[in-house]
Structures are given as structure tokens and as C-alpha cells.
Length: 284
Ligand code: NAP
Image 1: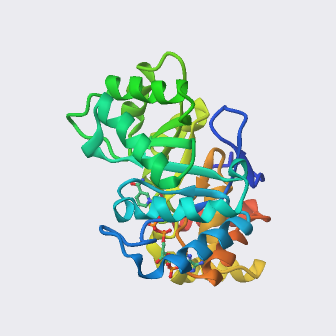
Image 2: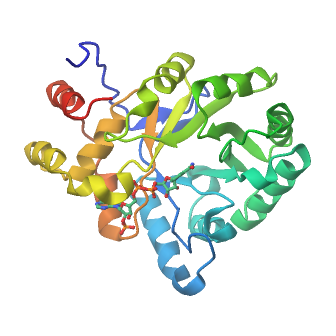
């Protein structure tokens, strides 16, 4: 039986951690934009247009990484945001495990800034933890970047609750505001430990692969619920995520119609009754 204590978050602008800063409930993923493991320069104009369109539609939070297309995704984001006031977009980028030492983190951040062609990163994350990373040292480098004004907020990605807690223990001047992790209606693993921890501590969960790489767009149960609202299966999958407190989603879209569809997963909410029904159909 689903919990009786579901409380719906109706905000499409959510607070980032406990910073007071607001971010959209749905942002843009960029894995695959401008290449995947290698840069692909053949569709640059197209991708710049897509990112700009997403921002115009309200998805003005962009998730990228130094690893994506070996930096080319960051370059495209940098070009796309030139059409907007810098303060009106929110950029997340991430440092790859190869660069997890004090000195390397700082160099990696400087290189990301150069590719993004901007003077600050809104949110900087450790992309993946490794068993051998010097976490205390890395957190000190993150604090240095904040002190220098090169990074506004810091966070992690793919951390479990225990490691997240450990990372926070090394910080004295700032705190972790977000953890970017895999989360969708079909993969609710984080609800066991991480989500309750994050909600209690007011740390934002940034849900990646929220559409299970597109698979959920074809889900029959989600499509059936969506018909009641004149919404698609993908929109139901995204709305289910953003109805949760401290959770935002970052679907990647490669077409204008997918962008529009994803943006229109905001502005409404599934009913409590439908949320309960979905919780039973897709158990943790
Ligand atoms: P996803 O967002 O779940 O799925 C993307 C796929 O769904 C694409 O093939 C896209 O197709 C399709 N799609 C998007 N909107 C759709 C719609 N409305 N209807 C039907 N299909 C739709 O998967 P993801 O790219 O793995 O995750 C999203 C983002 O999270 C990434 O881009 C990346 O920024 C981030 N991420 C982070 C990590 C990490 O370790 N921190 C790991 C994985 C991903 P089209 O391209 O044709 O639109």
C-alpha cells in the first residue's frame, strides 16, 4: 500500500538546496549533444539552436560535463547562452574522475570555464566517486573555487548517502547543495536511503535519465494515466519526479518537439490518487 503521507511539491521553480536560489523543476541534459565520447562538430548550429529553444521554453538549467564529447558539449552550451543574460541561465558542469586531486580539480574547473566562455559555473559536481579519490582534498579545492568566485555552488553526482555525508564533513565554509543521480519512476533505488537523507537535509536531487533514455515515453501505464490530463507518457514520468520535494529532472532532448513536450511536463501536477496508483504500479 502506498504511503498516506505523499505531499506534492507544486513549485516549478524549486529552491536549490537551502541556498535561496531558484532553479526550474526541469532542465536540459546534454549527454550526446555535440558527440558522446568524442567531439562531433557536424551539427553545431543545430545543437546551439536546440539548447536556446530549451532555455526559451523555461528549461534554463543546463547540465553538462567536461567528459561530454570531450568538452565539446560545454563549448556548445557556452555558445548557446550567449543569446541570454548570463544570470538568467543556470549551468551545471562536472569534473571527471581523472581530475580528482586538489590541483587537477582547479585546473579542470578553469578549463570548463574557458570552454563555457563564462566567468562562473553555477553548480560544480564531482561526476563519479572513485575508491581512491582524496575526498577531503577535493572538497577543499571546491571551497577554494567558491571563494574565488569561479563556482557559485558545489555538489556531487552518483554518491550514496554515506559518502555524501562524508563529503559534507570536510567542508567548513560551504555545503553540498545537490547530488545528481539516476532516478525515474522505473528506478526508485534512491528512495531507500538517499532521497530521505536529501529531503531531511534539504539537498537537491537532480534526477538523470528520468525517461530511462526514452524508454518511458512508450510505457503503456504512463500513457494511460496521461490521457486523463491530455499529456504523454514522457510527461507523466517527468511530472511524477518533480512532484517530489527537493527533486528536479534533467531529460535530454534532441528535437524541438521533445523539448516542448518536456517543458510541458511543468505547469500542472498529477493528482494524489494517480500518484498513489503509480507508486503501486512501480514499486521501490
Ligand atoms: P533521458 O533524459 O532519460 O533520455 C534521453 C532520451 O529520451 C533521448 O534519446 C531522447 O531522444 C529521448 N526523449 C527525450 N524527450 C522525449 C520525449 N518527450 N518523448 C520521447 N522521447 C524523448 O536520458 P539521459 O540522457 O541518460 O539523461 C539525461 C541527462 O542526465 C543527460 O543528458 C546528462 O546531462 C545527465 N546524465 C548524468 C549522468 C551522471 O553520471 N551525472 C549520467 C547520465 C546522464 P531525442 O534525443 O531524440 O530527443
